Image (cartoon, rainbow, N blue to C red; front, side, top):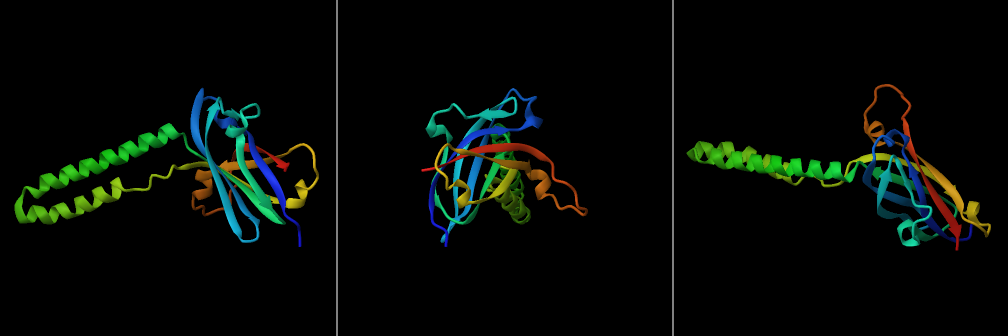
Length: 196
């Protein structure tokens, strides 16, 4: 049986060449350790990341802005990274959803003024306004990827080792495809792993 290692995971950089045309954007990044040790299925950390011309460089950022995990690991485990669409875009989508909910509620109130028949006609509009208004507020994913790791890779003491996670288009991963097609890689996440 392999022995546990205490490791520190810090974010070094995120690179998205297809987004180099954008002066800046803000996203939410989630890093997840999958089965770091027996009895622990996953540990997740989330942080806001800001891109300038498709790159988020945290190499010289304060430790509190780079830290993802301090965890004990053993044997085989994985590191997954996902990135949402621009947070501003998500706020706009939430606003549109709320606006549609208000419009449906107002339409339902107007139909209700037509007596008993109006009350029956109002029911589907009320139901739709609740569904639209209460839709999931989870941000849409832009990219995601994972890499398999082994605890013994980090057993040697010394400097941090860099791990690169290839990130693929989440939209393409979610699509139901009738044919086998390559999923485009849209970026990379570089994580430093150091034995404590």
